[in-house]
Structure formats: structure tokens, C-alpha cells
Length: 318
Image (cartoon, rainbow, N blue to C red; front, side, top):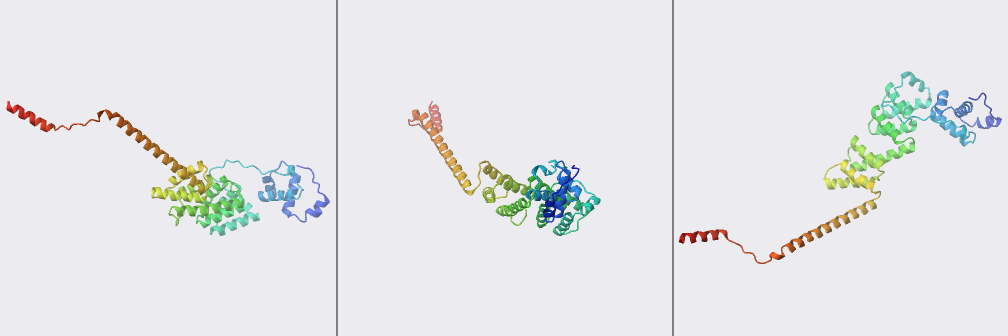
């Protein structure tokens, strides 16, 4: 840590009055601590959020007053996460409530979920920020999504948040895109299956998630696969629709025109197989005819009962 900090008169007179007080404090902490300190450590020393430190650092970099080599690094979080989030004691929560942003976040969460939050609820919500590393504005969108679905229990909220964290949904833009895709795509897919009046089950939702996010399949094609499933089976089958979409994914099908081309190829192959089958049948028929060409003389039809009767009459004469 530096023994002293030197600030120019120009900085004090021109920059300090224009910058937010917190940004000035972060700038001073960076100058005093050097590059060995992390954002998390500065946030802890100033009792602010790590995102605040990040925003302050970006501000000074844009002003040209903080070089890249001077910037502090975000403390890397391990990709390993325990099966359950860490519990934060009421004393810890009270400490974090001194931060205005956290306090407003908890108040907003109560309004969105329509209930008073217990100490356990607050611990879970804070864990989404501190443990999973999701920004507060992203968690806000997640809570709105869960509340609209009537899913306000913390177990469901945490499970959804873990899924977002694993998928890298860590900005409001990514969250909005994700929610729009799920909202529109899920509704259309369920309607294609004749199930438009209900929400998908957890297993069904897993298939839809795979189609739209893992396969990156357009909603129109997912709907088409569901319609084909109904036509072929006469019933709803997510596994069967998945087999169709997996084939399309493996073949690089991305548009309705691609589907039409694959259908045409399939029909062409089908017709080719039918022609080959007919050709093989004709070959077998010719072979049978060739074998029988030496026995083409008229055949006698023997009446064995009549022969037996004649033999008996002959013996009676004797």
C-alpha cells in the first residue's frame, strides 16, 4: 500500500466537484491500495457494493485518470457452488441493510412477492447477489418473472436463479431476452400441443428449454415439430418432438425452407427405395419363370379316388 497519495490541484478543483462522492472515495482507495487489492476488498472497506466499485473504476477510466495497469481486478469466484446457499445471520443481514441499495432491493422484493420477508427469505435473496453473483437489477427481473407465474416461494426462486447463473444470464439485457423467448416460445409450443390453457410441467419445461436455448431452434420450427408429433401419434409427446428437433439440429436445419428441403430429400430417398424394391421383385419373378420354363408342358390332374374305384372293380371281376 502506498505511503502517500499525490493529487494534482487540477484534479481537486475540476474532477472532485463533478464526480459522485463514492467515486472519489473509490479512486482514493485504488490509489492508496495499488493493484494488489480486489474490488471485493475495496467494497468491504467502504461498506458498498462491489458493483459500485466497478462502476466507479469505469468512470475514472473513461475520464482518462485511471490507467489499465492501475485498475483493480474483480475477485474471481469459484465455479464450484455448494448444494445449498450459505446462511446469513440476522446480524449480518442488519449490517447489509445499512447499504441503501440493499435496503431498497429488499423493499422492492417484498412488493413484488406480495409478502413480508422472513430472516430466511432475506438470507436467500442476499445469497442470489453475494453467492451466485447476480446483479441486483437482474434479480429484480427474476423476481418479477417468478411473481407473474405465481411462484413466490424461495425454493423455486433460488432454483431459477441458479439456472440463470449457470447460463450466464448476468445482465438486464440477457435477462429480458431470455424472458421474452421463454414467454413467447412456451406459449406457442404449448398451444401447438393443444395445451394452451396450462403451464408446462417441470419436465416439459426442460424440453422447451433444450429446444430454444441448447438447440437454438426458432420457435416456429419447435411449433412445427409439435404439430407433426400430433399428426403422427395423435397425442402429445415431448420426447417424440425432441427426436424430430434433434435431427433437425444435427442436420443444421434453421428455417422452414430448410425443413422443406429435408422433406423433399426424405421423399426422394423413399421413392428410390420403393423403386429398388420393385426392381428386386421383378428380378425374383424372372428367376422363378426361368426355373419353370422346362416344365411348361400340360400337367395331368389325376383323380385318385376314381383310380382306387377302378382298381377295386377290377379285383372283384376276379
